[in-house]
Image (tube, rainbow, N blue to C red):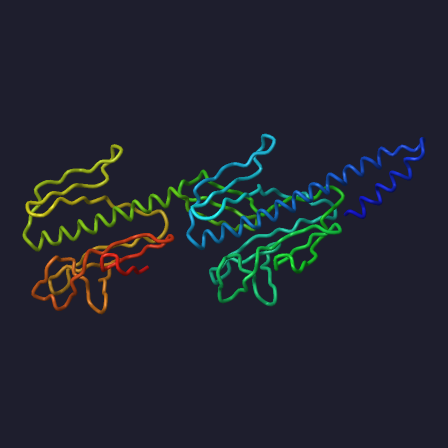
Amino acid sequence: MKKLLSLLVCGLLLFGCSDKYDDSALRNDLNDLENRVAKLEDLCKQMNTNISSLQTIVTALQNNVYVTGTTPLMKDGKEIGYTITFSKGNPITIYHGKDGQDGEDGTTPTIGVKKDTDGVYYWTLNGEFIVVDDGKIQAEGKDGTNGTNGTTPQFKIENDYWFVSYDNGTNWTQLGKATGEDGVGSDSMFSGVDYETSTDYIIFTLSNGTQIKLPTWSAFEALQRLCNETNTNLSALQTIVTALQNNDYITSVDPLTENGKVVGYTIKFAKSNPIVIYNGKDGADGNTPVIGVKKDTDGIYYWTLDGEFIVVDGLKIKAQGTDGNNGVDGSDGVTPKLEIREGYWWISYDNGTIGRN
């Protein structure tokens, strides 16, 4: 590219010595070329920024990181992309994806990610998996069994051609021509960023059709609230079973309201302390564990997880507060407790000493 500019400048100097020569056309060509070079440089920077941002998104998905904010990125009064912030890590910038006008000879390479049959996201080039040394390059941050670890792909433009590197710039592979007669093309990695359809997810759509959904911080707060309510319900359920065992009885049931809606009930007993029970709600996504109790053939109530008796060290965990006549068939345990760690449900059967996911 620089050689071509030098030749044009020399041509201007030679012909500029003549008063009769009209060099306006040549000057226009030079200006057009300079504009295309500047656009290509900007395009290359945006592509590398988008590639780095895409890897951050995939890693955030893998590590159950939440989106805390999506802010439009403006330039000259126009929206050109977004700034995305996360619950962990640095913010990223995403530039709008647009269909490129590649020109007669130029072609803009399209980098993306795609989930393979092993459930792992790998880098793609023009829709095909990138294969180096017989292995696909993972876009995720940890080792897999069927892929090789690789750094984020990088692009550069040299001698009018696109080059890509898969080893942090140590080696470069030539791709297609970067310049054409009519234009320079544009980055088409991201075809859309949807942060308005749902308050629970941000949906990133790539040009190859791949969609990546990242949960928002409001979704995490709702999930944490659900976890707290579930633990309250577990404690209340044990109180109910113990009240049944001890021939206690209910003295009152009062609706519990929040923002004008009934969200649960406060229940009072003759002997036991009052309890709060929250209404059950269907979850939008994910797998919310269902904790309950069930009477076994020995007449004792035991804790269940997703409909099956909870068994620890070969013994079922009793939901009743005291041993019964058939207590040898079960083990005394505290009320199960739930918590959320790094986007996963964890349960403890020993008052939080040991957690299981």
